[in-house]
Length: 125
Image 1: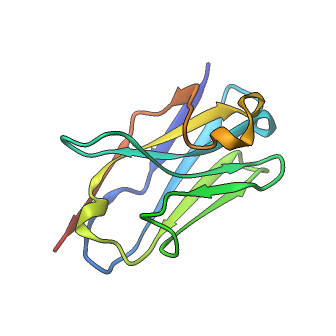
Image 2: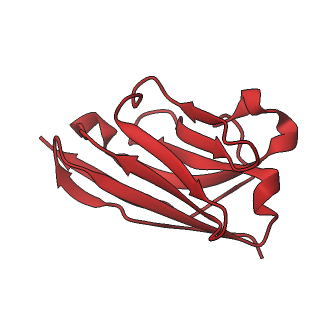
């Protein structure tokens, strides 16, 4: 059974930090890129940051570059998203997703074969 279990969301003041974790199981971790997309009310889904565990390629949305850092612990099949300097516009439900790298690394954070239940991130002004 494929599982992507997110943790680490919460409420934080603007300028604060949060660390999201995504524990993956049920599929070959090395054959997938793992990452995060977010969905805010009334807004389109946005790919935030993704990483290919096989070669370390990463993607960051322009809106989070310089503030968010993604990393992968392949021994634990876990991906982390360190979010610093959070802004109110970062408020959203954050979902962990997985993409078969066969789609090509150019599609990082655009296609997701699996995703988790999501975790709420709320940034107050």
